[in-house]
Picture 1: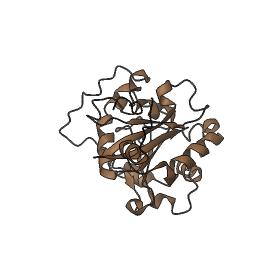
Picture 2: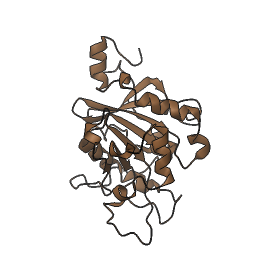
Picture 3: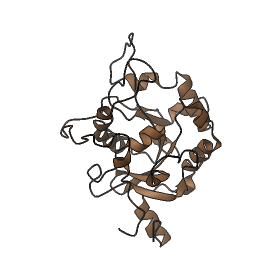
Length: 245
């Protein structure tokens, strides 16, 4: 165990250090916004979960809070940018899932950001979504979400996210982030199953999102040769360890 790739434990260095992420009762369902799941998601070549940051409310909203995610998918320039990044066609959203990490409205207008408390209250819901959707790939949108994602030992008892150091997120994205946040990870989704997880610039940051390395990261993430099983199985199959020596 100690010789394998390092576990993800850089959350303590995130902008939200000090939030009591264990304050939410664990006996109740924590997912507030029902994730969007395309009609062909479970039949996809690789089950991809796209992970955004947060929702903002709007005055004339005519759907329930739970329905917010599903009813907004594919209707904005934001979603068009994601589809183009991944080279999808008109039916792109039929084959993927989408979920915003923060499980409350960040505000009532675009560009209002979640508070540290909002991030902290959302980690349990993320675990629920991983178990429900069992993705094989996770594309994280934005540095803030990437740094704030749950990754502490208490979030994944006995089964922490595991570093994939051979998958760099690129020199531009990796500026001013902890060393442990510069590469992809395998996130546990079910017993013995993992999702290869990588981050790109958020579409709301055009200068970063247009960087060539965004395309490179997205393309590599969706390459089946990267594997569809957990790091332990990959090591066993290859007959060697994949992490630090």
